[in-house]
Image 1 (cartoon, rainbow, N blue to C red):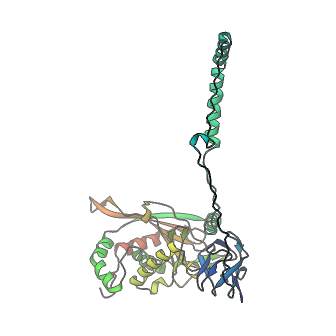
Image 2 (image 1 turned 120 degrees about the vertical axis):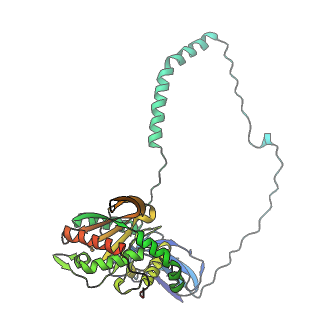
Image 3 (image 1 turned 90 degrees about the horizontal axis):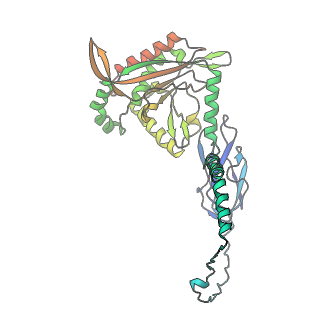
Length: 381
């Protein structure tokens, strides 16, 4: 029986996909549920498993082809078997021993004897006259070759990278982006994490990180300043009465932003579990389209790569994004004294079309206060 291999139906926001590389070739046996090919959309990489065991008898769409949902890309014959190819006997060939001097590597010696000394003098004079000119030409040619013959490699951008580029340009051209900064003293959070991390891991089976504190602080601030959680659609401002927080995650394929749904309803332990799960599956390309769709506000942490300060770019149609950075010990003034504290610089980029500077600054101050006066990771404390 012939089985059609089809591209899975894509989400409404994804029109096309790209075939990355076939894992099987025509004539090879495939097992049911074996991954035939990876299919890349502008958000995720999907695995396409075989629906039945058999022989892959035809590949209709080759590596790199652009496809749409439901399109037939290969055929599997469940009743076929691998044909046995008969190989003719190898006829031995007796070759004669040959010495190295008879192996085709003959040395040709050219001996030129010039007896006429006058001719040698003429040639020497000619070489002397053209020496400078030849040297100059050689130098120019060498410089030209060093510029034009440098090694290069041209690689087509992946569909995800193209989508990232498109959205970044869209963000820059369609939003009135401004950025405001503040600094937060991370001392209390560091002490709180050190005090409860062992108990937290034992009780919830996950390590207590720093990102969950930022998620909780953002939710508190969004509840105080809901315009930061809104978005623009045409000439309308859409207010969201829920808090879907996007967490930017770097992967081998590029930056992806999976969404923590209803973050205000989740415990800190559940937030940590989601962050770890997202990070792990992002590296494997296993995030689903649904997990990467939507979001009302985003957080990006350049600090994990060592960034001290940066200006994050808004992820449309969202209206704001918080950038957090590496925590560094810095001299600060407290009660008239200079002390050393672990400081993290915060950056809030926002769409000035609907968010005024006052709301943006006060929102960031609210995030700072929530971080400097954090809630215990255990509800009873």
